[in-house]
Length: 166
Image (cartoon, rainbow, N blue to C red; front, side):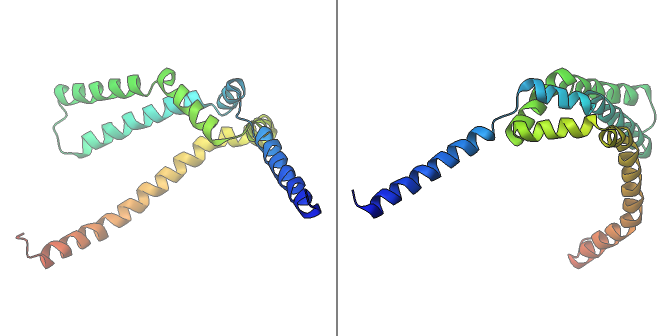
């Protein structure tokens, strides 16, 4: 083997070794660590809060729809919410969330997130995120109220340009 070929082989082996080491270092996170992270993030209560928000949104939509507030309409809403609670229960949702975290993060990243959420700043973040989310949702709803007349005007203009009857 020539000196150049020998150096090329060494370089190739070094590259393969570094890739192997990098792959080993970027190991998939353990279920226990993902579970710990989800616990620190209050993921289960976030799912419950999401269901409650969907319920409130559905109630608001029902009230604003012009549909008479009958026992039948409320029963229909309640049936839909029962399906949502069942299909999006923590027991059914958690394995899917864990898979997303497993596919997305390395063990090192999960460990870093756990360290953050265990820190005072991380605990403050978790405590205040619901407030930030609620205020952000409120801002989005206000913005949508401002946009609705413009959206309706654009839709009306498009309808007129297409020659559709009023």
